[in-house]
Amino acid sequence: MLRISKAFAPILERHGGGAFLNVLSVASWVNGGELAAYSASKSAAWSLTNALRNELAAQKTHVLALHMGYVDTDLTRGFDIPKASPEAIVKRALDGLESGLDEVLADELTVQVKRGLTRRGPATYPSKPEPSVAAEQHAHPIHRSAWTPSADHRDDRTRVMSPGGRIRTPVAMPPSVPQRQRHRR
Image 1: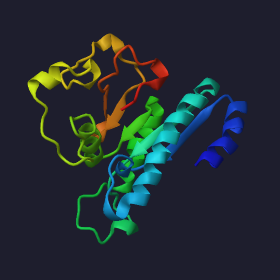
Image 2 (image 1 turned 135 degrees about the horizontal axis):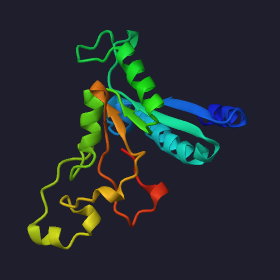
Image 3 (image 1 turned 60 degrees about the horizontal axis):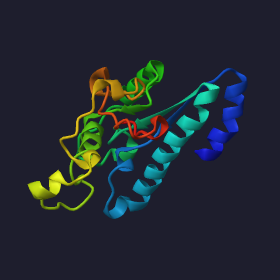
Image 4 (image 1 turned 30 degrees about the vertical axis):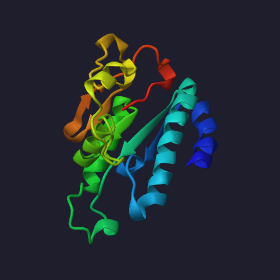
């Protein structure tokens, strides 16, 4: 992915910009068992996608992350689980690209998993007992689950397209985090 991006970025720049759409997975955020290597590679690809987005923005090259769960393809034919249609995934990806989004969460499973990452003790970690109220009062404000930013701390590019084509703006980071280091949901 890096080599392809680096090879085509100068060509896109010469033509006034363009776009990369990086196909990722819900496995970018969860792992376990037999998916450890796959999840690690998707996590690295997600990180690279975010880095390329920042690096290539000045040349007007848009980098879109497409995350999805199971898609109804030959690979998943034997799995008795809910799957998105390839056509629905492609439509959401193209809609997100046309809307200038940074990230498309292409199905409900992906939306739920991504949302779970912001909970205390994400689903990817073993469950822990809730801290006492006294311990919570001494926690840094960023780590408190009750912290709520105001709307003026949002960057209008931090939008995601979820199933059904709804564009939403997730919770932003506090103003103490520099703009380009903010985690985009």
